[in-house]
Length: 525
Image (cartoon, rainbow, N blue to C red):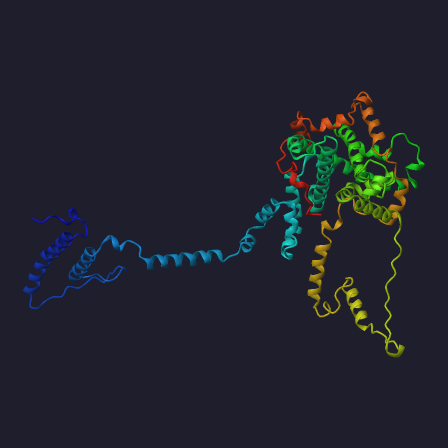
């Protein structure tokens, strides 16, 4: 008795033998029935065929089974190990697939992102990188210019310290632009650079740390002094910037300056100092003499001895008068002070100060157009045709533009010219076209401001000390720290955490606190 097929191993040789025996046993009665009739009867096949190919006969199945067994007999582990040709083929295939995947450049992948993701990625970059992206192409410039609001809002929230927001509060949240953000970073850069320069001078001349070992030992005190000076110098920048604006407005409103007005407290300075809280006003007042004395020391000959030794060393010029210091701080601001400070060599520095002061005080002569006469042959001159220039001028006036490249626009269609004008409007009328903080004054503004500037001794100190006593910040003038006390206050170790919380805010990230690298040249200016 043969075992049933279901208990035999599937697809084995015995399995197919059982199937053949079963089929032979079923065909025997059918053959007997067929031979019993007069002629052989052919069995009809079913018309329903599955879509997997034709059914194979038993003989064909057994033939295929023998081929399979022969292949299994020739099978060995050598057949599954990769050959050198197969490895080379797979390597070439993978390299081709990786090349296809890398064929799409990064800029196309980035531009394929949704606009919200692109702006979020751009906003997380440093501000200098964002401004450099505006120079990459017109599409980048348009993308950043149109999305100034979310970019500036992100930086204002994550990278601007608290004291800068208090002195320069943000305008309407819907009108925040890159010009406002770049203005704050410009002022922070100037304050950070001046803090470094003042600390270098104080470390060398006051604390007498001259050797490398002494400076290395003094490094923690140096860093605390530099970090404490940055917010104070930022406030002094705000004072001079606001003072210049309010002083010009005061003269235009009253028709005369403060020199014709009797006062005990300078009204313009008192209006500015009312913006400062008690702690800020007191600390800036204590540091202000250090800032002014450091600037004056920078413009003085390096030697303290007499004229003979200075002449031998080549220091021929004396210190400038007090009017120069006042003009530099009130008209040029701390940015101009920093420019003078960075010039190496006393003679070069004094020469730059004298040339700048003369350019501010004296009105430049009117510029006469340079006319070049051309003589012809035998003294006969040839008249130059103005047809092309007149035609170009008419074209520029017709399209509402100024002078441009002659002959390049005339061949363009009206739509092309309108696109060019729209692009120029987008570039030159963006928010960054408004200029840097505390820029140059016009000749009319200089004429009304320069004669009414205060003396160096009357600048800040009398008004600030009177307001400090009136507010009751200190009880006596002796309680205001001066000179050596200020130096020790700047380098003291205790209280640094509370000051950081006050100046920079509680949740301020590390990017808000300026590192030592912030003193490098500002790339966004």
